[in-house]
Length: 431
Image (cartoon, rainbow, N blue to C red; front, top):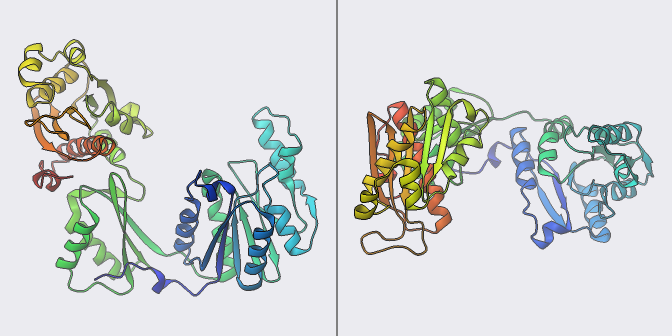
């Protein structure tokens, strides 16, 4: 069994994380910021020792702030820097440090510039964000109006960050640099491989079966998502052991690997299309345009995505894509003959080189004995190299659509790259 913990390579650190906001306590907002902060710190060779989540209540926040500044080397506060009365972070940090709030000139300039770029006249609520504890150093916010700040309280480095995820993400490099300067450490080596069509348990079993010795200083981890599985290698440095582990993963999961870092399935398809100077067309029924949506969500889609047809009703399949009324009558909309004609029609009506067509029964109703809920037919390829497959995916409607859309893109990717046309998730009748 391979240890999935990264703690063995992390130094002992006293980093506390205090996350604030009533919306987190009510469940209206899911706390994704904590994971973002933890992952950024891990890449800097640090880890969080304690995390506390509290609502916007002065007494509890002050108690947590006081406890951390008596014990921790670093306290990262997330949230509470905005313009409203329940944004208490600056006020509470000033109280903990025993200093007044002052109008910070650089923070004021930042707020006024931010408002000016949006043709907004700054009011008192906007300028509230420029009142910071005396002696605080700014942490630039390149996205939003609320700057972060750093302040030393009795030897504890207090770093404050906004609760808006996009703003936090933009500020994390500066935050991590301050943590590293305070505690030491350095960046870890991390490889993130994005895969599709293989589950976490299957991946772990393959590694266990094929690997007699895994180096103790190379940590393997998984992050399951929809529709991808991320496989991670983490080590203190890029070493020969790391490269051997990477080669093992590439050997075991080669045709399932989409790319590294934040590569998406649609992004991987775009890259191949662009490299081959080809364009894609989609003809969708049961997925309702989800495949086209995945493609166009990626920047640069206009150079590789020709068109998307969503022909949900049978008369639209006939009038828009030219599917034979007789075929619809005799074979039904969810059939091999219909998806073939959908794909041929989409290719003929566009200038695309390759396409994908899908038709299925997403449920929860509409199934029959011959075609139960979850039945789907897919056709993919070019006019002179066209393939089909039929399977049954007995899951809920949303998951069905996501799986079918992802599988369709993967089949196109495989054909373009000359990979095995029948991946194991079809041969095993499951994605």
